[in-house]
Length: 44
Image (cartoon, rainbow, N blue to C red; front, top):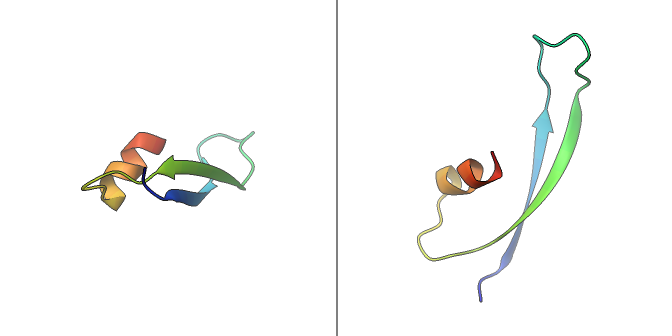
């Protein structure tokens, strides 16, 4: 069992007039060979 990783992502879509800047929190379990690129793709 890997560590629990917490990501705080700032989200905002400037092309959407209804979009409001905000933070979202996500938790992922660390796995072998996990890179930031892989983690961000999983969060997407």
